[in-house]
Image 1: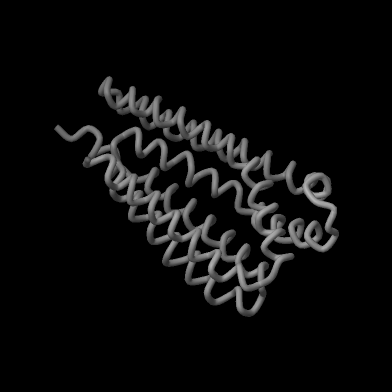
Image 2 (image 1 turned 30 degrees about the vertical axis):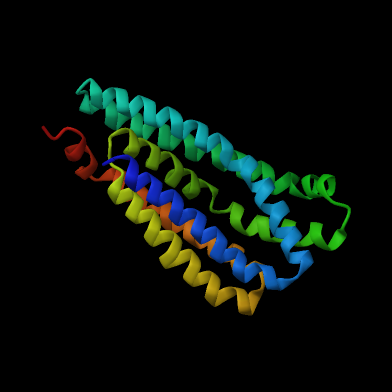
Length: 208
């Protein structure tokens, strides 16, 4: 329960944030809705490798903590996070180049394709720090550090993304939603890197 409840609350907060974001995107019309859906689908191809590396981080850090090897846990946490950032930077750069072809494959609607390309390219600049938030959270979870990261995710999603979405969408439309997403992902990645660089999660993992 100590480990699982914060993780469950984190996922609930994430799902709630997605629902609230859609509340502001839905009134923008069919073209914006379709472009948003296609852009989200294409962007998932960029972060799927990050989630795979995250699972490796959970396992490697968890085994190191179980073996009482503080040196290994720190090394694996940093190695996997750096690897995730490198991989997702590469996938983001690739998607930036090929997304017009990806959307041409998904839809024949020119307006939807053009809008999807523009909004996705806004967010792709955040992929390196998005990777940091994904993989670092896995490393921290492997060390049993779930409460503080869960709170960090909650603050980032609701205090940054939702607030910016509320402020930007009425003025910039779908662009505002994706600008808000990009800023929030950069903020989240930064705070997770700061948490990983601290010694607090290590002290909690090896307490007792």
